[in-house]
Amino acid sequence: ANSPYMRIAEFLNVFYSELSNPISLLIGKGYGGTYTDVLGLFYGIDLTEGSFSDKEAFSGIFSTAHSMYPNVLLYHGVLGLFAVIKCGFSYLKHLKCTPFLFAAFSLFLYSMYFNVLLLLACLLLLFAAESKIIYKTA
Image 1: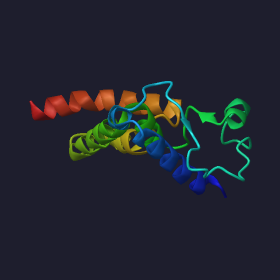
Image 2: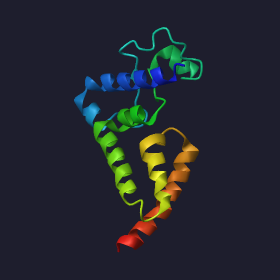
Image 3: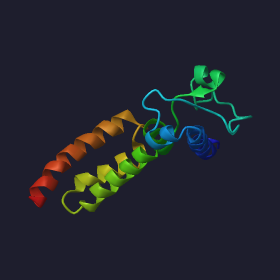
Image 4: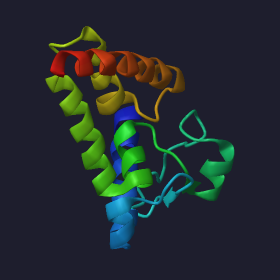
């Protein structure tokens, strides 16, 4: 299967494309940011078989990746990636307060930008968990 290879190739392409601009590497390109296959890792792979839209596959300009980490790196840079991971672990530290915080692992360490329905469910669970955390720590 190409899936693991594509995820690593996407991460490397995003990282390498942002290396040319240190500010972009730190803070990202924002929503709507794009990357290209600067390393040539997509060569010989059919990108139209579910990986990308036909428009992206033929133009060679990609606006999204297929896992959370390259997307966060593309949109928010290294600082954003660090902040998302730090936020996920800070929620997991409070796991003893409420089991709703299992959503933190799912959201901040796996599925952000990946599945919109899962994102909404996780955000609602984290909102519910916040009231428990404030109640337990107050």
